[in-house]
Length: 296
Image 1 (spheres, one colour):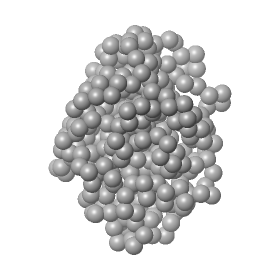
Image 2: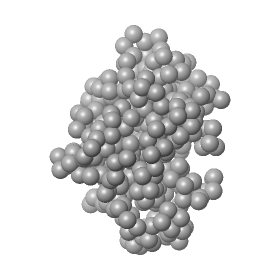
Image 3: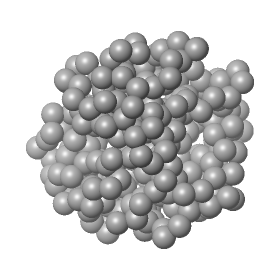
Image 4: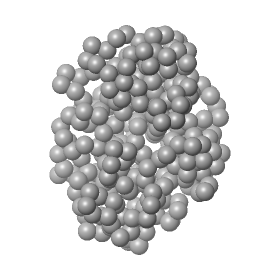
Protein backbone atom coordinates (compact mmCIF):
# COMPACT_ATOMS: atom_id res chain seq x y z
CA UNK A 1 0.00 0.00 0.00
CA UNK A 2 1.26 3.46 -0.81
CA UNK A 3 2.61 5.47 2.11
CA UNK A 4 2.05 9.25 2.27
CA UNK A 5 4.06 11.82 4.23
CA UNK A 6 1.39 14.53 4.52
CA UNK A 7 -2.26 14.22 5.53
CA UNK A 8 -4.74 17.05 4.94
CA UNK A 9 -8.37 17.23 6.02
CA UNK A 10 -10.72 19.91 4.69
CA UNK A 11 -14.03 20.62 6.40
CA UNK A 12 -16.08 21.92 3.48
CA UNK A 13 -18.99 24.38 3.25
CA UNK A 14 -21.61 25.05 0.61
CA UNK A 15 -22.57 28.47 1.96
CA UNK A 16 -22.97 30.96 -0.92
CA UNK A 17 -20.72 33.67 0.55
CA UNK A 18 -17.13 34.76 -0.25
CA UNK A 19 -15.48 33.14 2.79
CA UNK A 20 -17.71 30.55 4.44
CA UNK A 21 -17.14 30.15 8.15
CA UNK A 22 -17.34 26.40 7.80
CA UNK A 23 -14.26 26.05 5.60
CA UNK A 24 -11.37 24.74 7.72
CA UNK A 25 -8.10 23.06 6.76
CA UNK A 26 -5.68 21.02 8.88
CA UNK A 27 -2.53 19.07 8.11
CA UNK A 28 -0.61 16.29 9.86
CA UNK A 29 2.83 14.98 8.97
CA UNK A 30 4.01 11.38 9.23
CA UNK A 31 4.92 10.18 12.69
CA UNK A 32 3.27 11.35 15.89
CA UNK A 33 3.62 15.12 15.65
CA UNK A 34 0.28 16.88 16.22
CA UNK A 35 -1.82 18.16 13.32
CA UNK A 36 -2.04 21.91 12.89
CA UNK A 37 -4.42 24.32 11.16
CA UNK A 38 -3.62 25.70 7.73
CA UNK A 39 -4.78 29.30 7.81
CA UNK A 40 -5.51 32.08 5.32
CA UNK A 41 -5.82 35.76 6.34
CA UNK A 42 -9.51 36.53 6.60
CA UNK A 43 -10.45 32.88 6.22
CA UNK A 44 -10.59 30.48 3.29
CA UNK A 45 -12.69 30.83 0.17
CA UNK A 46 -13.45 27.94 -2.17
CA UNK A 47 -11.38 29.76 -4.80
CA UNK A 48 -8.45 29.89 -2.35
CA UNK A 49 -8.76 26.16 -1.78
CA UNK A 50 -8.88 25.48 -5.52
CA UNK A 51 -5.67 27.50 -5.94
CA UNK A 52 -4.01 25.70 -3.02
CA UNK A 53 -4.96 22.28 -4.35
CA UNK A 54 -3.62 23.29 -7.75
CA UNK A 55 -0.30 24.21 -6.11
CA UNK A 56 -0.18 20.78 -4.47
CA UNK A 57 -0.73 19.25 -7.90
CA UNK A 58 1.95 21.41 -9.52
CA UNK A 59 4.54 20.48 -6.88
CA UNK A 60 3.48 16.81 -6.86
CA UNK A 61 3.19 16.96 -3.09
CA UNK A 62 3.20 13.59 -1.33
CA UNK A 63 -0.15 14.22 0.34
CA UNK A 64 -3.54 12.59 0.77
CA UNK A 65 -6.33 15.17 0.94
CA UNK A 66 -9.62 14.35 2.61
CA UNK A 67 -12.64 16.40 1.50
CA UNK A 68 -15.66 16.33 3.79
CA UNK A 69 -18.29 16.22 1.04
CA UNK A 70 -19.96 13.74 -1.28
CA UNK A 71 -18.28 13.84 -4.70
CA UNK A 72 -21.35 12.42 -6.45
CA UNK A 73 -25.10 12.01 -6.10
CA UNK A 74 -26.93 8.69 -5.68
CA UNK A 75 -26.98 6.74 -8.94
CA UNK A 76 -27.18 2.98 -8.32
CA UNK A 77 -30.64 2.98 -6.72
CA UNK A 78 -32.40 4.43 -9.78
CA UNK A 79 -29.87 3.88 -12.55
CA UNK A 80 -29.15 7.60 -12.82
CA UNK A 81 -28.65 10.82 -10.89
CA UNK A 82 -31.84 12.40 -12.24
CA UNK A 83 -34.00 9.52 -13.50
CA UNK A 84 -36.44 10.52 -16.18
CA UNK A 85 -34.36 13.49 -17.36
CA UNK A 86 -32.76 12.84 -20.79
CA UNK A 87 -29.73 15.01 -19.95
CA UNK A 88 -28.86 13.19 -16.72
CA UNK A 89 -25.06 12.62 -16.69
CA UNK A 90 -23.75 9.10 -17.16
CA UNK A 91 -20.90 9.23 -14.64
CA UNK A 92 -19.36 11.36 -11.92
CA UNK A 93 -16.97 13.35 -14.09
CA UNK A 94 -19.83 14.25 -16.43
CA UNK A 95 -21.83 15.29 -13.36
CA UNK A 96 -19.01 17.56 -12.16
CA UNK A 97 -18.80 19.16 -15.59
CA UNK A 98 -22.56 19.71 -15.73
CA UNK A 99 -22.68 21.29 -12.25
CA UNK A 100 -19.83 23.66 -13.05
CA UNK A 101 -21.28 24.63 -16.45
CA UNK A 102 -24.79 25.26 -15.12
CA UNK A 103 -23.45 27.33 -12.22
CA UNK A 104 -20.75 29.20 -14.14
CA UNK A 105 -22.30 32.59 -13.30
CA UNK A 106 -22.77 31.81 -9.60
CA UNK A 107 -20.19 33.72 -7.54
CA UNK A 108 -17.90 32.08 -4.98
CA UNK A 109 -18.12 28.69 -6.75
CA UNK A 110 -21.64 28.29 -5.38
CA UNK A 111 -24.29 26.03 -6.93
CA UNK A 112 -27.44 28.15 -6.62
CA UNK A 113 -28.44 27.95 -10.27
CA UNK A 114 -28.53 24.16 -10.43
CA UNK A 115 -30.92 23.68 -7.51
CA UNK A 116 -33.26 26.33 -8.96
CA UNK A 117 -33.40 24.59 -12.37
CA UNK A 118 -37.00 23.75 -13.33
CA UNK A 119 -36.36 20.04 -13.79
CA UNK A 120 -33.52 19.42 -11.34
CA UNK A 121 -35.19 21.28 -8.47
CA UNK A 122 -37.82 18.52 -8.44
CA UNK A 123 -35.20 16.16 -6.94
CA UNK A 124 -34.09 18.42 -4.07
CA UNK A 125 -35.54 19.30 -0.69
CA UNK A 126 -35.05 23.05 -0.35
CA UNK A 127 -36.12 25.61 2.20
CA UNK A 128 -39.92 25.88 1.92
CA UNK A 129 -39.87 23.88 -1.34
CA UNK A 130 -39.64 20.11 -1.53
CA UNK A 131 -39.46 18.71 -5.05
CA UNK A 132 -41.97 16.07 -6.07
CA UNK A 133 -39.11 13.66 -6.90
CA UNK A 134 -37.44 13.98 -3.49
CA UNK A 135 -38.02 10.61 -1.87
CA UNK A 136 -40.02 10.76 1.39
CA UNK A 137 -38.14 10.51 4.63
CA UNK A 138 -34.36 10.52 4.50
CA UNK A 139 -34.15 10.89 0.70
CA UNK A 140 -32.01 8.92 -1.74
CA UNK A 141 -28.66 7.61 -0.49
CA UNK A 142 -25.56 6.32 -2.21
CA UNK A 143 -24.65 2.69 -1.53
CA UNK A 144 -21.71 3.72 0.65
CA UNK A 145 -24.16 5.78 2.71
CA UNK A 146 -26.30 2.69 3.24
CA UNK A 147 -23.10 1.02 4.45
CA UNK A 148 -22.57 3.93 6.84
CA UNK A 149 -26.06 3.45 8.25
CA UNK A 150 -25.31 -0.24 8.85
CA UNK A 151 -22.49 0.82 11.21
CA UNK A 152 -24.73 3.17 13.20
CA UNK A 153 -23.85 6.41 11.40
CA UNK A 154 -26.53 8.84 10.17
CA UNK A 155 -25.67 10.05 6.67
CA UNK A 156 -27.88 12.67 5.02
CA UNK A 157 -29.03 12.55 1.42
CA UNK A 158 -27.15 14.83 -0.97
CA UNK A 159 -30.58 15.83 -2.31
CA UNK A 160 -31.44 17.40 1.04
CA UNK A 161 -30.50 21.11 1.22
CA UNK A 162 -32.21 21.89 4.53
CA UNK A 163 -30.97 21.79 8.13
CA UNK A 164 -27.67 21.85 9.96
CA UNK A 165 -26.79 18.31 8.87
CA UNK A 166 -27.44 18.86 5.16
CA UNK A 167 -24.54 18.02 2.85
CA UNK A 168 -26.09 18.81 -0.54
CA UNK A 169 -24.77 22.36 -0.93
CA UNK A 170 -21.28 21.34 0.19
CA UNK A 171 -21.26 18.44 -2.25
CA UNK A 172 -22.43 20.47 -5.25
CA UNK A 173 -19.90 23.24 -4.66
CA UNK A 174 -17.22 20.60 -4.15
CA UNK A 175 -18.07 19.08 -7.52
CA UNK A 176 -17.30 22.44 -9.14
CA UNK A 177 -13.85 22.40 -7.56
CA UNK A 178 -13.21 18.79 -8.57
CA UNK A 179 -14.12 19.62 -12.16
CA UNK A 180 -11.89 22.69 -12.22
CA UNK A 181 -8.95 20.65 -11.02
CA UNK A 182 -9.29 19.06 -14.47
CA UNK A 183 -7.91 15.72 -13.38
CA UNK A 184 -4.69 17.21 -12.01
CA UNK A 185 -5.21 15.41 -8.70
CA UNK A 186 -6.58 11.84 -8.83
CA UNK A 187 -9.77 11.31 -6.83
CA UNK A 188 -10.21 7.87 -5.25
CA UNK A 189 -12.01 5.65 -6.22
CA UNK A 190 -12.85 7.37 -9.51
CA UNK A 191 -9.11 7.16 -10.23
CA UNK A 192 -6.54 4.59 -9.09
CA UNK A 193 -4.16 5.52 -6.30
CA UNK A 194 -1.11 7.10 -8.01
CA UNK A 195 2.44 6.00 -7.25
CA UNK A 196 3.46 9.59 -6.52
CA UNK A 197 1.88 12.99 -6.00
CA UNK A 198 -1.35 14.06 -4.27
CA UNK A 199 -4.57 12.09 -3.96
CA UNK A 200 -8.08 13.21 -2.94
CA UNK A 201 -10.43 11.00 -0.93
CA UNK A 202 -13.91 11.60 0.44
CA UNK A 203 -14.06 11.76 4.24
CA UNK A 204 -16.84 11.69 6.82
CA UNK A 205 -15.47 13.32 9.95
CA UNK A 206 -17.70 11.29 12.25
CA UNK A 207 -15.81 8.16 11.17
CA UNK A 208 -12.60 9.77 12.43
CA UNK A 209 -14.33 10.73 15.68
CA UNK A 210 -15.52 7.16 16.25
CA UNK A 211 -12.01 5.85 15.55
CA UNK A 212 -10.73 8.30 18.17
CA UNK A 213 -12.98 6.79 20.82
CA UNK A 214 -15.66 9.49 20.77
CA UNK A 215 -19.13 8.14 21.53
CA UNK A 216 -22.08 8.54 19.18
CA UNK A 217 -23.77 11.89 19.64
CA UNK A 218 -20.61 13.55 20.97
CA UNK A 219 -18.53 13.74 17.80
CA UNK A 220 -18.25 17.54 17.74
CA UNK A 221 -15.33 18.81 19.83
CA UNK A 222 -15.10 22.44 20.87
CA UNK A 223 -12.32 22.56 23.47
CA UNK A 224 -8.60 21.81 23.72
CA UNK A 225 -8.82 19.10 26.39
CA UNK A 226 -11.33 16.97 24.46
CA UNK A 227 -9.36 17.41 21.25
CA UNK A 228 -6.10 16.29 22.87
CA UNK A 229 -7.79 13.24 24.39
CA UNK A 230 -9.08 12.22 20.96
CA UNK A 231 -5.71 12.88 19.31
CA UNK A 232 -3.96 10.74 21.93
CA UNK A 233 -6.34 7.88 21.11
CA UNK A 234 -4.98 8.08 17.54
CA UNK A 235 -1.36 8.11 18.71
CA UNK A 236 -0.82 11.83 18.22
CA UNK A 237 1.01 14.24 20.47
CA UNK A 238 -1.04 17.14 21.94
CA UNK A 239 -1.82 20.01 19.61
CA UNK A 240 -0.56 23.57 19.96
CA UNK A 241 -3.22 25.85 21.41
CA UNK A 242 -5.34 27.59 18.77
CA UNK A 243 -5.06 31.36 19.10
CA UNK A 244 -8.24 31.92 17.08
CA UNK A 245 -10.35 29.69 19.32
CA UNK A 246 -12.16 26.38 18.90
CA UNK A 247 -15.17 25.39 16.85
CA UNK A 248 -16.25 22.06 15.45
CA UNK A 249 -15.02 22.95 11.94
CA UNK A 250 -11.35 23.25 12.86
CA UNK A 251 -11.46 20.45 15.42
CA UNK A 252 -13.09 18.16 12.83
CA UNK A 253 -10.27 18.98 10.40
CA UNK A 254 -7.51 18.52 12.99
CA UNK A 255 -8.83 15.20 14.25
CA UNK A 256 -9.50 13.85 10.76
CA UNK A 257 -6.01 14.78 9.55
CA UNK A 258 -4.58 12.72 12.43
CA UNK A 259 -6.97 9.87 11.61
CA UNK A 260 -5.95 9.87 7.93
CA UNK A 261 -2.35 9.36 9.05
CA UNK A 262 -3.29 6.03 10.63
CA UNK A 263 -6.19 4.98 8.39
CA UNK A 264 -4.42 5.29 5.04
CA UNK A 265 -1.96 2.61 6.20
CA UNK A 266 -4.81 0.05 6.51
CA UNK A 267 -5.14 -1.97 3.26
CA UNK A 268 -8.76 -3.00 3.93
CA UNK A 269 -9.94 0.62 3.78
CA UNK A 270 -8.74 0.86 0.19
CA UNK A 271 -10.69 -2.26 -0.79
CA UNK A 272 -14.21 -1.97 0.72
CA UNK A 273 -16.48 -4.95 0.15
CA UNK A 274 -19.23 -2.98 -1.58
CA UNK A 275 -17.12 -0.98 -4.03
CA UNK A 276 -17.63 -2.09 -7.62
CA UNK A 277 -16.25 -0.72 -10.88
CA UNK A 278 -19.65 0.79 -11.64
CA UNK A 279 -19.76 2.62 -8.30
CA UNK A 280 -16.20 3.81 -8.80
CA UNK A 281 -17.39 5.61 -11.95
CA UNK A 282 -20.71 6.93 -10.69
CA UNK A 283 -21.12 7.26 -6.91
CA UNK A 284 -17.66 6.92 -5.45
CA UNK A 285 -17.08 5.77 -1.89
CA UNK A 286 -16.35 7.28 1.51
CA UNK A 287 -12.85 6.40 2.68
CA UNK A 288 -13.04 4.41 5.90
CA UNK A 289 -16.34 2.63 5.14
CA UNK A 290 -15.84 -1.11 4.69
CA UNK A 291 -19.39 -2.51 4.50
CA UNK A 292 -21.30 -3.92 1.54
CA UNK A 293 -23.55 -0.94 0.90
CA UNK A 294 -26.69 -3.04 0.54
CA UNK A 295 -29.80 -0.98 1.45
CA UNK A 296 -31.39 -2.04 4.69
